[in-house]
Length: 290
Length: 261
Image (cartoon, rainbow over all chains, first blue to last red; front, side, top):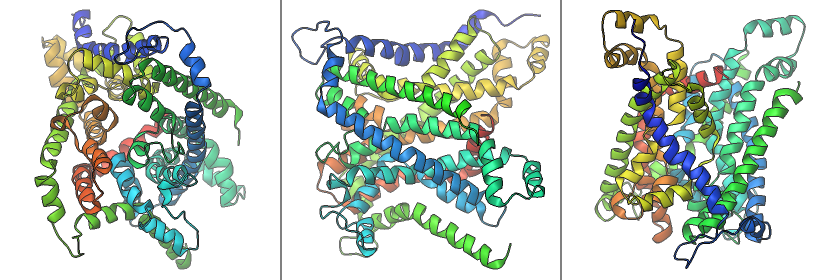
């Protein structure tokens, strides 16, 4: 019998090989090379500067603020989104009439373009927007200029919007996890006299650990790259209050065309993301037993 | 369950539904609101006549359709080649897929921007389409799916004297229809909604897609919310239609993804 010849295999895989080399491998390497130069648009000559860009980053208050804001964003949204989406999944997991409608409705924000969501909330958060009026109505004291124009509330407002956007998607991921837990485990727990809370704590949570790992790692990686909502809603302002890492890379590289410096910033953020993913893997794989 | 608990459950579910859906409802309602209140189509007329939303809609559609078709074809061929180990060092190429899945896109945007300028594709349909002809998640999905198919069908085809291409497209591809359907839906929705690459790789109005047009509209004009929301509706409706048509596949696609973890 004729074996499939290697030639046709290469031909079949060619699209990926080409896209991988041109749009991923080359940029990944080139980005690092750029980060060691002072390459910028219309500069007289480009020189190797070694690690100078990295040293400059560590002393650049804007970059440090962007890292701090990104950290606040990730630490503030990922756990909240995880808890809320797990709660939603538990709510819609049962067999009750209309559950498909609730699942679909909670998932709707996840399929909506981030640009559109950012536009909608730009209005809702504005001084005459519904969320602003609602905040006044329930006795909160929202900043006079609107949520997005105040240093105190801009980042928090975008974080809240992000939780709202992402919750439905992770709800479905958790739902998939919940459906893999065999009923016998719950039966056994009930027979042993476990309350619903104990069942959740000792059956559901431990069984969901792999899904939880997936949700936390993926959501962290995504949240570290927050960009679109910042671009549409605040452009990093007011006074750098919403300047995040990737927005810093965009500003430096593609608005000020300081390619070398921006590439160094991109690499620092990349390393932080990689490190945190590894830590999350280690911690959630071995360290957490319910 | 007792009736009070049941009613309480529905009240909670409905309250959450209002929270999740309200902003989208607000978008629809605002888009039909006239300057002095009342229901009007004037906002839509305006964005299609004064702003070039017809062009943006065309661009978004063209790019999303080409990218979707290309992904179905290429993710299929690549996933198949990897599943059947047709290439020496197949594991190496499989790992490239897993690695790219973990690489944040911000790290490659500057080199890709420079590259597109260098090869003269900056600000063209090529820039919008080329980077996304095939995607790692799609290849991964097809590879996993083909791995579960028995090789015997392909071998039977070979014994009958069918050529490799015939086996690939007449025997294997139809079997992969479920995974290719989910793939097509996901690629279409992701590409339709995408902002970052179209935004940094184009500059002229001629190649502007809907998300880019909407984002720029907020920045450069005095804000007219009803018009912006009419534009948003134009950007949301196709995805919403796809979602409503393929709800079951989309939802089970995501939940099934979690089963494999």
